[in-house]
Length: 351
Image 1 (tube, rainbow, N blue to C red):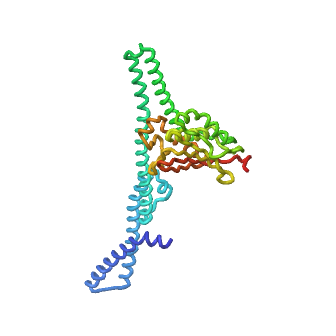
Image 2 (tube, rainbow, N blue to C red; image 1 turned 90 degrees about the vertical axis):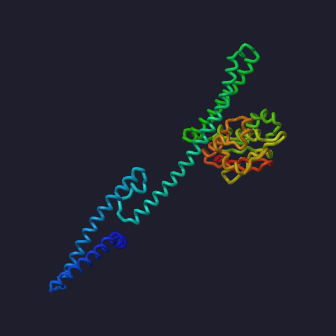
Image 3 (tube, rainbow, N blue to C red; image 1 turned 45 degrees about the vertical axis):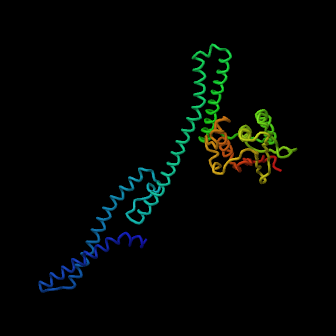
């Protein structure tokens, strides 16, 4: 406390000493000229001068500084800075400087974060407009062609209407995926946990995607036989969506006559890890950190040819994080990719 007092009163003490010294010298010179000098009276004069100067300077300076610093605090509090609004006003300049520096650092971080978010927002809006524009223009083109006279040709009419319908289905697919991600981010979609056999779920997903994989001559298989069920505690429907999205991606970017292999391994006592491994084109390392961003494409032309909403991996990440689990990616160009994620084993059926 003594240190704080010395710092606070240092200016007043020094100023008072200087003023007292000067006035006392003048007082002594004046009385020496008059021919009579009383040193006791001079000392008393010096003490009174020092006391008056100290009180006046301290009070005036404190009030002067306080008013201006109070304005700084008030201005800063308008910016809702908890570091300022929650503390009493202080006239100690070192403390004020430290608080302002801390405040400025915090605001710099906020500004940098806002800039990053602004860039992300621009990219996101650009991607959304691009994804929606393609099927919209396609549908519009077919409809305008029909209105221009192609409607009279029955075969052409059916052909264009089917293509227009596919464009509408793509739009619905994109909007549904966007709605799903938005709900996840807003916390509106809850994970409904239940115990189920993940091996059975993977096999069911294989069956659903069998025809899609057959078109590219890609085999969907387990890494080995699983004679016994492996029970996990998770949202069955959403985990099936995760596995389906990962398998669809492996089919899209896999080589003909390739293989997509799924394995389920015990990680620790109450966790398993599901791995989806393919021998497809692979992903360059510089793209891996951004794979789970909405609409992010590694190969723009290739992904457009393959279709899809561009939201599959983003949905996968949201679902896994909603389960409070982790997802990992390993990939090498020309060798293939492996996506893996953890799940909690059923508490009632942990071995």
